[in-house]
Length: 193
Image 1 (cartoon, one colour):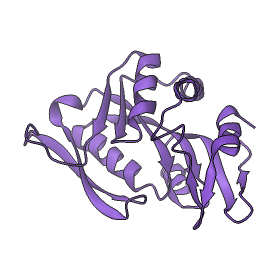
Image 2 (image 1 turned 180 degrees about the horizontal axis):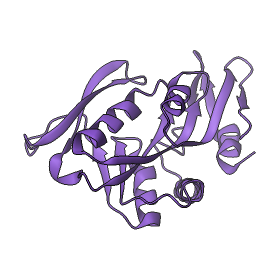
Image 3 (image 1 turned 60 degrees about the vertical axis):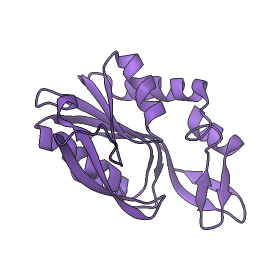
């Protein structure tokens, strides 16, 4: 059992509907030591893969992406979900259904931040159906860049996202893959890796 699986078991909570609540260390309150370990573990798993940019989607993936950008010493870009007064019209746009928020989002990256010369490592906190990952992949492709890999903290293995991305040929690494959860018993079964 790895460090993230242990942390999920010790500090996580399963809510009714088999919803894993780990926002006390991953995506609301941030445990810097866990983020640091995630970054180093992803770099280890992508050993030999050359990247020059880390890409995520706002907001929960930003902490992981920032730590990973620091470890690789490369820029971090995050796709935005909402327009602001200073948003540019010159942007790559895709759509992603949010499993968490149960709605479709337009996501975008301003064109100056993604290029055809970029080898991008895409990262996020959770992977469920893969909608956010496919939107980020689309943004990289629109820029003419290359997806060098996809790094995930927690994959919901009982959902299709990981399987589909692997079948599509992407190098996907998930630190913890949950195959089963039971909220009544508060038990989690992790996939052997």
